Image (tube, rainbow, N blue to C red; front, side, top):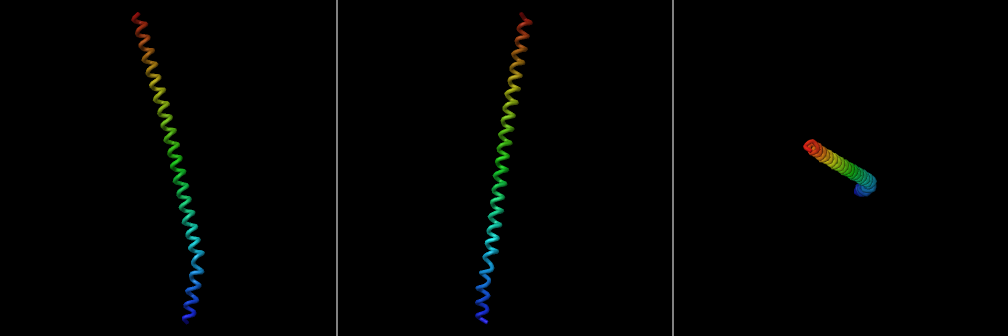
Length: 83
């Protein structure tokens, strides 16, 4: 009986490592996938923010240029009328 218990205790650890390795592999794969997804999301967010900032800067520059040009044109017209 004692020999049977000893034999069973020796058999169980031999059966457990493959499952442990499988669990470790699954955990590593899940962690790698989560890290890759987070990195991709961060990169996409950064690219979108940069594009939005560039577009806003271009729009502001164009609007300021148009307003300054219109002011200059209006002042030139006013001066030409006064002359």
